[in-house]
Length: 51
Image (cartoon, rainbow, N blue to C red; front, side, top):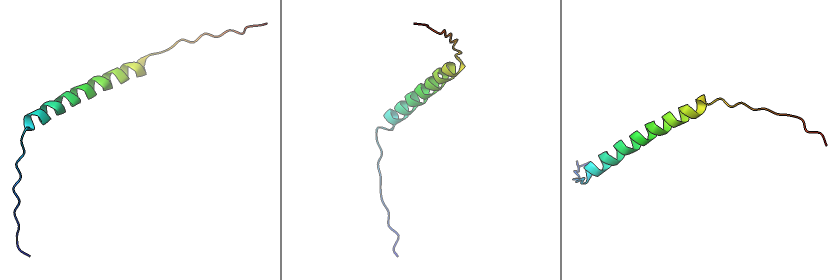
């Protein structure tokens, strides 16, 4: 089989890098918020009500 070549030009990579960095930052912020939610302790009080 003969060797074939293909040329590919990629442009606008900077935008992809910026968007990827923003997504990574937002994911880290979300993970921190989830951790804070996991650390919340709720106090629940109940009482019986009679008619």
